[in-house]
Length: 277
Image (tube, rainbow, N blue to C red):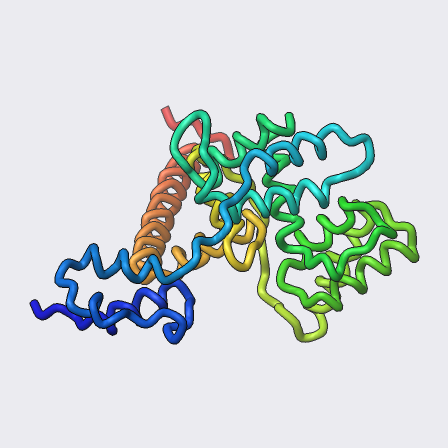
């Protein structure tokens, strides 16, 4: 296998690091270095080291936020987002770096808040643009809006915030109003497909997988992630073949049961109460 020229390695490494190659040209001496490790090390030396995530200060701020008496849910959410961005630099006291598992357990130890609560705070802060928020209604109103309208633009979210403020809506009333508007839109040429809601119980590891996927880019609700996966799975041709087979099996069982019941009814049918002995 032919070795790439040093210039090509430099360009590839710079492209990966997002650095302009013009500021880091190899010297003539380095161009003759044969070993790959030496070449990559020379490239690294050309780039300044990025500032390291200050884990100690980050943990201190989290503890301070948790002790405050006023509502700091937005601040804790932003604090968690900052911590997730610094995840590669965090040294976990109880195990390896496992995003979505050890991180939130670690944050829970710092704040005293439950892991589920922290995930909810981070998800809401991550999805709701700070420029669209308002202090005229509660954090919970924002949470309802972003959960019900995860794909709507900022202007639509702000409209509902204004509605909640002007009409003094509780979170439940706000949720009902949003869903009522959505149904009204469906009746005017929107999504006219029929939907069915049901509850399922899954293994904890499955739930945690769906929860981690919901925090991706762009973030969404755990329920939507599960619904999308289930919808895609049901569209698969092999699943539809199994569906048709199951429907035929069910039709056969129903036919057999009705036939047996029909024979039983026929045997017992005696409207004149004749003696058959």
